[in-house]
Length: 178
Image 1 (cartoon, rainbow, N blue to C red):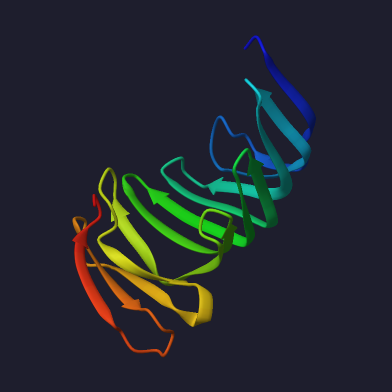
Image 2: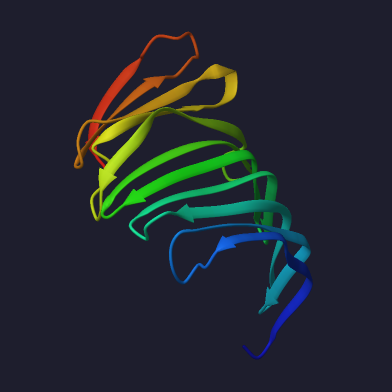
């Protein structure tokens, strides 16, 4: 786009492909590295630094195993910044059925600190719906946390420990859409 300035480097390396991704079976893995990569448009600048490894495999073109992992990926833009660190996102797909597991630390100027996300029980669902089972805990300052429990594909329960003492202070039953 006219007026857009790109700076820095984004590289794809450590590419390993076994089989043919246009047929089955196959597996692939690659690393994406961003080194002082920035985009400036209308005096707004966003910068990206870090690396992540992506992988995917399938034996039949129906069931897929996917992962994204890395030690750090940092985004800064006018007015804020965020860093994803020690991250691992794993998923499987089998037709429309899926699973999802995520562990990461997110630090951000928007939230004024960092939170750690740990999947306690793998999320499972059937597309296009939200997960019908699974549990994750998000822990912030002073060990305060929220545990998110999938009750079904519509409802989710939030167990809030405001002071980090290990006891639930508030239970919120809500929907995924809220």
